[in-house]
Image (cartoon, rainbow, N blue to C red; front, side, top):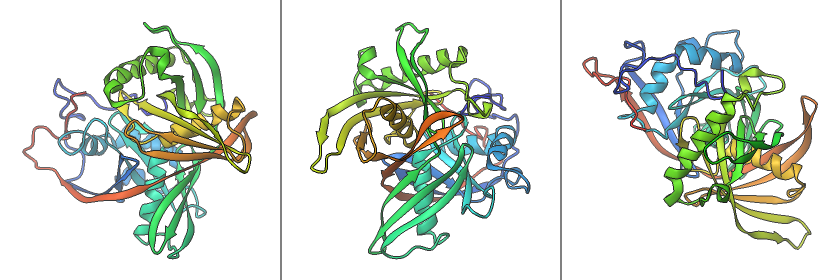
Length: 366
């Protein structure tokens, strides 16, 4: 199984409808929608019952979801209730009482192992909803179990309002450098783990820019790179095969030269667009992709403790990233990144299913 759970449990006809050959899902689903840096995040507090039974870790619940929760995922991701770039999560019990909640992240093609922008949204939602009490001014940690491990969303409040959220993830490491990719372009990439495996390369290496006008071409290139790397098994996780496989391709460029600050630290200004799963485009700077980028920059000594990376997305939103601490992971040198961004509620929804609707659970045109 690849990192995005993309070995599908569904079959579909030419329209993409009737993905499970029937209607095994609920008659309605309630969600709370947020966006982090422009990237949508659809929270489902009442997960399908198969995902909440006792005795399972969150990583194991993801395996169950791949087999048993595809219909509901498809209903919420696909048109007409979603779109090709929709993202969300089922809330599930955490691994133990030390965490506030568990989350199974999903997109139009399956279930991912990590999601930084979603972790930020979940932290903000937990505070805004009162699930995790917070003071009017200060920082509140929301601890979340996700398939790749235990993460923390530190929610900063000012005057009773959420100012921003810092996502602190699992230890991240460089998997491989200068990997040749057997594509028509013949590119070379680096591979890093940021909760999921990412291929990273400058957009200029394929003659493109990180800008909206180039998104269609970046999608095509990202798909080709990801598929070629996964065909060659270039991203096998050293300890857990469930985390293997390239989840996304991160195209980067320098937005402006690095700046030396008065205290002697540096600030880097980079821009990126992440193409993940089967051609989805992250509107945010991508939380787990930014974490992988921090691992690469730290490994190259371009980003040190105290330095900051301003990581801009293709729509202009920005995450601020730094090295929280050094670490080791499976015998490898690693870092624990901290990524800060803003997240906002956008809707509370109740999606319904009409028994006569022939297009349930939906379709995608890309």
